[in-house]
Image (tube, rainbow, N blue to C red):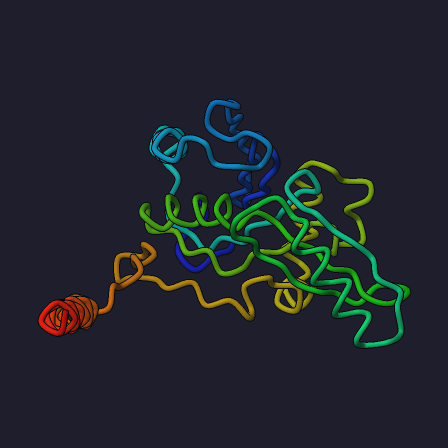
Length: 220
């Protein structure tokens, strides 16, 4: 794959993704037993599939731009001029997206605003497994922001080169720009930390409850 410091592309679709390494377009089909309706139903199966692909193709680590196909995105154009109504419509739209966790960003449209969102779990699954193989995902960008996308629904060499030639567009359209994904030194997202005070708080509550019961019983 691309040598260290060079950019590569993953074009993520509903049940497949393409990788462009600067020379070739590689394709991976994902069974519906692993990804169904843009939802991760078998995380370990997904990890094994992608890990095997990386090792079989002998892909070398690179900086990755993750481009989202229409098939993994939900979007809505909002032409309201009242800022309050715009925010209300955006909230209603995001609430209707059928995923527990989403990644979203608003973009300027010809008239008003376009909000684009996708399943964060699916995106994180891709980022995690490539990070384990020492790739660095530097951005997540919807393919729809590229002018040539309307005629390029899949990734080919011309579209891939066009993407990499538009670095400023990718940076401004990066959906991760306002999202902090916690990353450990190994590149894997850190698990949510449990509060160390929780056991003490629970113990104190139980003690107070016990004293209260003793007082009530003694008065009876």
